[in-house]
Image (spheres, helix red, strand yellow):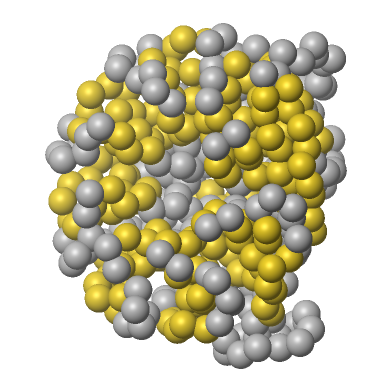
Length: 401
């Protein structure tokens, strides 16, 4: 059956909600819960906006979570308009910019012939890689923007590739994982054992590579671990069992951020659970009945999870017990979160960026990037965070005492 794309979050019929957010039009028209109004806060964190730039077209209405990448003092961004840019991380000024036609060729203007970037960018050791909604993977020299290679995969790419040990791992929307040679784009292996359900959330989890193992979320609610060098399956574990009487109630997916640290994998499934699993075997250390489409953000002693209603939770890293929850952002359809020192940073549907104290979840600061949704995870580099909205606006913020 043809896969049905659902933007970001789909509330089951039992909750009286329909298609949700990101690019949806009007809460009343769509018969969904209106976002919780923001209340005035007294900032306890000093946040300075360094710059903003509108470099490329962002994710638009594609459902992708295009996020910035950082390397060597530059921030790299891509958009559904076919553009790829390198920005000076200190100033936001454009270092280089490219636009690509559907066959990977260079064109001088935007238009219907542009490739629509949906996955990435990712950067490692001077190699910049992005994937398109046309199933093309493009590698560039991160320093100059010059072509390195391009490859064709089986379906659209709406998650950032992962790069390690000379291999680029690409997740496609038809459930496959491709291992490509980082030097020339040639195919080294393909993982094709995921059964793609008829109904699925719009989005894919970014693969994580740690110590020669690829960890990836699947549309059938499973987390899979593959050996990087050959794509062989090491283990798989179900986080969303897909139980219920209707297709909506059985919706199961792992689309959000996956974290790996100290031999443990942390992940969350939609209409499933948040879990800590042994990285070598997939054996659960703990599970918490917490559904999420944005995944987890990792800190030293906690993980942070935005649930399916956009209530933010802090769970103890060792036990999975709840330390606190913050419901002041409920129904604001948060993007993926990131940790920034003693704070959690996350964007919402109206372009606001929120900083929550990791100790108790209280609001520490708030800044508005734009009036467009922020769906991708903020990129934290030291005391600076780079945030991108779906319209391609990128902002840089520095925190101080």
